[in-house]
Length: 51
Image: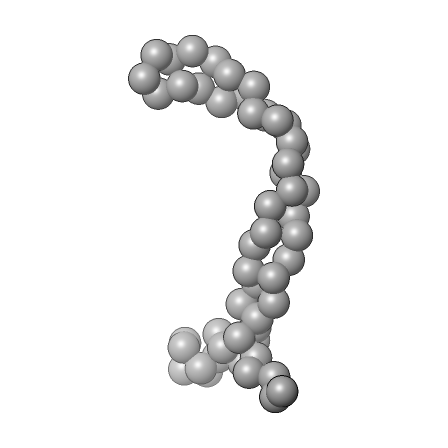
């Protein structure tokens, strides 16, 4: 399968942090977690931005 140069998925570790419930204003603790992000490839970026 040929590479399209769109980008690749990357796993990112997020730290635990304090957040706020917008309805009540109560402070809540948001736990640490791993999330999946998508990093755009250079070929795709250049095609869209016209470089």
